Image 1 (cartoon, rainbow, N blue to C red):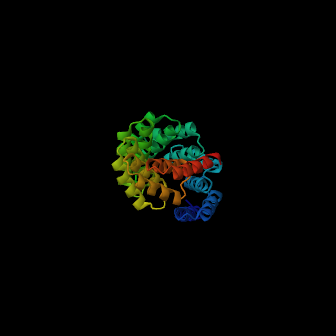
Image 2 (image 1 turned 45 degrees about the vertical axis):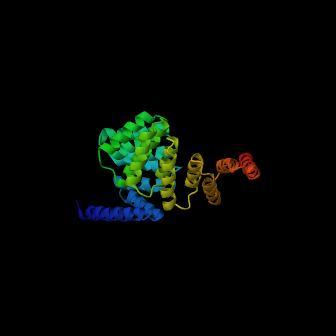
Image 3 (image 1 turned 90 degrees about the vertical axis):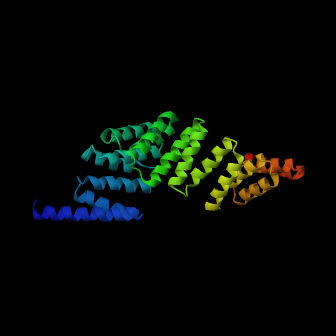
Length: 288
């Protein structure tokens, strides 16, 4: 390699490293400029196309054509670039092109059969198509290869729980939500689905306990107050239930459901006029 080409390679390597630092710092416009400059200096530098795609995807997740074009160029230059196949799949998944996304994940799996992230994302796409049994098999593969970060492992267990819930396998779903919370303690959606699954199983005392933990970690989220109120209602603790519904309303929980729930609790206490006001508010929200 002559001295000019050696210096050029050193320059683009340094630029790539700096671009990745900017990407990881969410300084996306600056990162894009670095990768774009590398493309101009050395169009065959495959990693620059890959990271340029990642930046473009993060900047416009619902308009992924440019990101996909970058991944396609990376794949053209290196057809065995597993991460580029996965990221292209993620871009397609974001616009609900699930079949096309699965084709990308299958390419990645063919190249790297034990890539947990390819299996995780394929599972998500299969879930998007309602193919929950196949999705669960993918999530199990993702877990079995033990290459996921703790955060991604939490996502796998959460997604598996959702798929199991769709199949009404609530005990198994509950186990998955508990594993998701163990992997990532502050995981609001896992707490929410854990409490809703316990409700499906009619374990109302456990729902109350779960919602207390949820509320302690996320005091500004309204949903657990409504769920807690519904469990207390089932336990015949109507005054406590109303207090929960009031808190959900204070936190601006959307929809009419919480007003209907409050009205039902008031009726149980014989407060029919107050209950009717709640029902009227629910009708008003339904009609708006």
